[in-house]
Amino acid sequence: MAWTTTSPSFNLLPSLFFPFHKPSLPPSFFSNNPSTPLRLSPTLTLPSSSFPTHICTAAEYKFPDPIPEFAVAETEKFRAHLLQKLSKRDIYGDSLQQVVGICTEIFNTFMHTEYGGPGTLLVLPFIDMSDAINERGLPGGPQAARAAVKWAQDHVDKDWNQWTGDDAT
Image 1 (cartoon, rainbow, N blue to C red):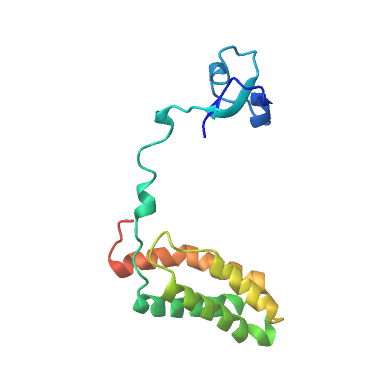
Image 2 (spheres, helix red, strand yellow):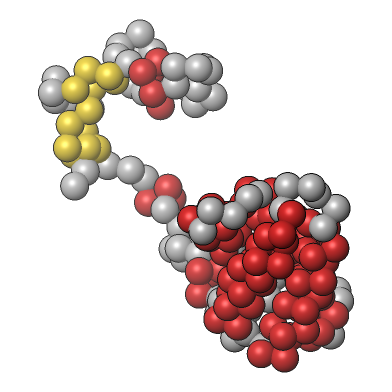
């Protein structure tokens, strides 16, 4: 469906589209006469240069499959760090091992099934950690998830690059 500027069915001023800042488009973009409001109807034709011929080659990129040996090694590093980090907090008490266990299980599953190198670290497993801890009535779900995601952001991609020998990225 294309749009033309002839039908009075829509009388939209450019300020409606850009309420917080002045558009950087020239006034001629909106009409031949800058004082005339833009009138849109279902036949506006956009120049073909508005749409590139290739959508996005990045969308075609296939990430590597997870590496089970890497997942095991990284999960052990994750568990050791989380245990050490959370043991410094008084909020966990006798629940520390359970909280670390939940986080480690979710992280391990993610590393074995989803993580395929830089660009594939997702936030969902860390949200799941917080939710699972809270659902079981254990203390400190958000704090544990924050410590987990912080560690993962700082280490997982770097460790993957070292593991695969791709230290250039």
